[in-house]
Image 1 (cartoon, helix red, strand yellow):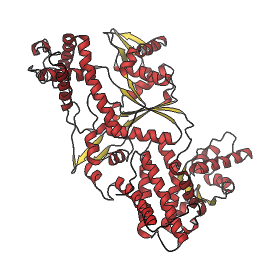
Image 2 (spheres, one colour; image 1 turned 30 degrees about the horizontal axis):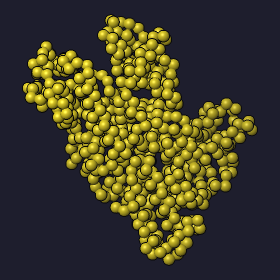
Image 3 (cartoon, rainbow, N blue to C red; image 1 turned 180 degrees about the vertical axis):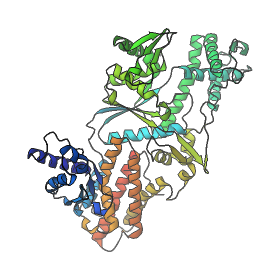
Length: 583
């Protein structure tokens, strides 16, 4: 309805332009929102207040010019000017009533649109370093990304979901070395485990598998492993300590054996991450390897492009990208003085590769701690003449876990964290998916475990699902009483009490809410809608009987209930949440 009304307003403005009453170059900024109360109608717009100044006339004067044209459609009961220039639209009652049969006819397709026109869009999300299982902090990005993908698909976009596997670089070397040191411990060597290594139980598990399958094949005496290694913290330097151990591991094991341990750790954890995400209802079309960028020469090619465009320079033996010329706070190294390319160089190559694959829009969903990366990545695209404005970066704040009013502390490196798998098993996928997207991605989130476990109306996901289950019980009652309802022969004008009118109006808003959530990248818009729809249904259910003697009224009410159930189901599916038939 919102789109239809916006189109009608635009057409009315064009008529005024053609008649010479408005300037030919007038480009209207149309802002339309549902009325906040009955006095403001079904929709209201402030377009006259927003646009009057550029036309050199008073807002109310513009409103008065538009009013005769806006009031023409038969689906409008009336259009009126309010205050200094607001315009309120009142839909005919029959229009809202017709939504019931529209929903019942369209079923799962209700609320979907072709707004995206099949444009090719990529969403890259989660992309956590495969240095351990996913924890509850990663869960928010996973739920948000998967839900946004659902919304964009529902509004006509051709969506590809991608996980960028950081399978190269220092963090992965720390992981491989951590596994090898635990293996040496299991092989009987006296190892003092580094403070900066990965210390979770999963490291022991991978090391145990290595020892079980290969015995002492990878065993090196501890004295050799720690030869000439910088002291660890607190007396020494923990970063230098682990780097020296990585260097010794590569030298002592040799390239082939080191790569085997490295790949064992990597592949084991990627498999764990894939399984966890799949069980969470999150699937990816592509798992893109960072190592692939180097192996296929994409990183070198990206640097060459920058060199050809004179966007890099040499300093102190290193190669620097002129990112400060594009608004970044300083220039960035892309190739170190030892000849190794940086993580940022891989980032440049990866984003070049994305647009080379033909995506018209790219959305990166990153943790809030990656805020500083935004200017440099956009700078690199600008420098290579790629469309930087087609790269969107959404920052997702960390989710804090609370139980009994106390925040649960977490540290990934020490292994002291709550795995996403544990959360799923505790509160269930539905509560986890729903809670994760209840707020805007850039807002801090406190995940209340106690509330998520509750089977009461205080739990928002339970409250919405219970509305769906209640309607299923109405259908069951009809079956038990052998009541058959012809949904094509309905007297929907019988839906006239205030609860029914509010519910009808809410149902008409669903397609607009889905489109708005997709366009604004804000899934919580649909969550808020579902909670309000459930509240209106529960109020109606508690105030009125559905299965009454009056057959026409009964059929109309049951049809409205079934339409409500369909919208609840459609919305929950977009959120990755089930719609149970009984609770």
